Image: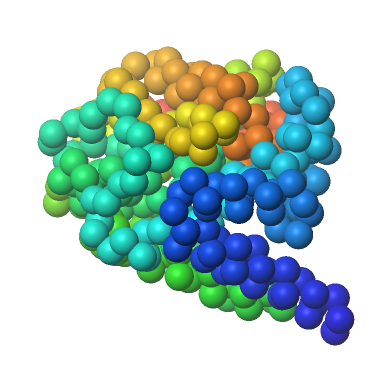
Length: 313
């Protein structure tokens, strides 16, 4: 009982109190507050310890304590972004400490490709700023997946409602999302996919890529839809000035989904982002199992592709 109580008190602190305080302060003061909290272990220490245990085996992270503090900081960025969005209801609002580099296409019919690398809410807001409604592909947020963790479930539900508000419609949930995504594109929505999904979370359609110097895999579903509908894939990523607390949302050049190297191009963008700011990648804890499951996941995709080709012949 006491362990559950402690967990929920920590969750109130890290998901509501700390980011809520930051959201109402002028950003320079807010950033000092977030950095001070991140240097301790009271907020998001669980993901920080998990990332610190994995990342040094794949990249030079420098000082391990500083790396862990920056992991906590990125999680605090992510939660604070929700409250900034809730306080500033205009969908296209973007503060001075969030810079945008590049432009979204004028035509709303495109696939947005991102990663679990420090995104926050700003991609949704920048699309609204450019005049685009958007919809994200998501797993369902099910209360049964959070037994004994009501605070995390409530935070996630709040976040999901705000994402729907920013995009202009409810998320499209996996599995069996393909027809809805094709229709959303036809209706003029930009559809958003987060590509760095390990086989554990996205078992279908995994194709081989090189990532962080290893043989890994990424799901091909969003590229397949873009290729089927005939729309470009537009990547984006975040860059960081952690001295000033400034983040840059960078919009990349459109990618032709029919290009055989398109998935590797996206993997290369993720690779560069992780190497530049390794503490911002939320999926370090997934990486060892991801690598272990890659051969079987790629083999399943190959078998299904061969079976489909045989049935069409």
